[in-house]
Image (tube, rainbow, N blue to C red; front, side, top):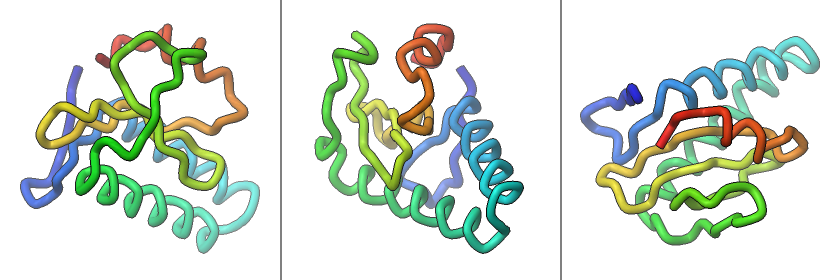
Length: 110
């Protein structure tokens, strides 16, 4: 799995998470506008920073995966992350109405 981070960021984004964020921005841009898309993505990044500062504030979702990841909600989006890595690894960012269990089972992200 590839992960990217800026050397100043206290978190890493898996390639799949980067693609998820790009997809979210594009969807919101098409449905709403650039301002809405930018706002949601900004709030997601604020969430990444909150998680990096407090990695255990997320919660397990054994109904969605048996992997050792935690989930943190921002608006209707679930940030899926590995809390024990330093920096933390954001593995996925998915809308809660999607079939999150299926998507996570198909990804080899962790």
